[in-house]
Length: 338
Image (cartoon, rainbow, N blue to C red; front, side, top):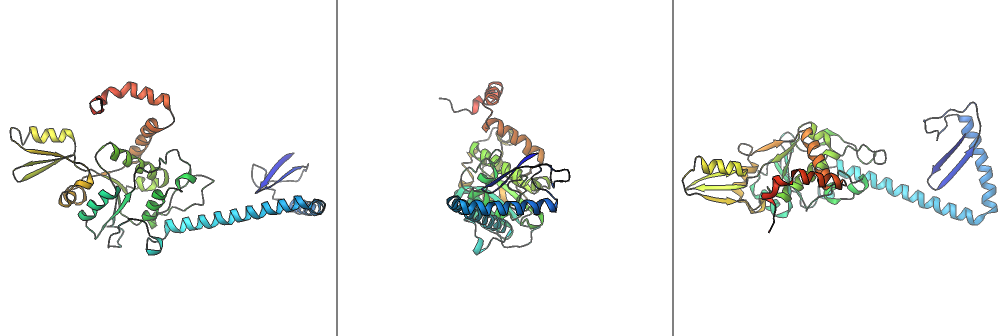
């Protein structure tokens, strides 16, 4: 029987025969026979002592590599513990998240977190919110696509780690190489609602999809338990005399203009983004629990979105070409072709 044991930088290859050896796991890297462990330890100690005395240069190189490996393990452990503490600890002066705006209440059954797109939306939402129970977390640009990225790359993203700190519940990591990064605990979630609030344009939809993908990959329980929502923002503001209507799609706009306002001269303004909205309008259409439109995200919605997102932005080039060939004609009116 031949097996290899790799422990940091030292590799032991042993060739032995035994009728009494048993192993701890199927990979046969660890025996659970004490007499075998003792015999091998004593044998290796004696042989290594002789080898190191006869080969001092090799002994120095091995010792140096052992110290490097030891320091690497210690640094990795400190980073892991720090990461776990930051994700589950309180967001205070000592653990501050840049540009995060908290709310006053500590009652998690009332607290709502609005994840918004950029600094301009942050300013508008901040003026529109109810500071008693609505917090704000801006994302700076388009976050990493978590659908394909490995955990090492994901946890290097400051935007993602900041958002995870604000959520407070940790992450659900299903990977043997990152299983100790952070423990997910729903009881540590600081919010009753996590609301994704982006512009009603192509960039806003893509950022929304990226955020949903991140939550689906790292905290799927939040979606399964119904904590994640999408805030619909109006596309059009329609004004006639002193009355105002808000339309959230072209179909709604046509229905309002062709129905109640048919034949009347009204003013139609298209929304330029959350950052351009007046605070009163933002409160009425996006923040006020009595009048806003929130869509609860369901698991099947995210799975379908992730599949389309993977098709359009993933590595399957031929699949993307086929999809565009089959469905591209549906979106010619939206294409910027000149």
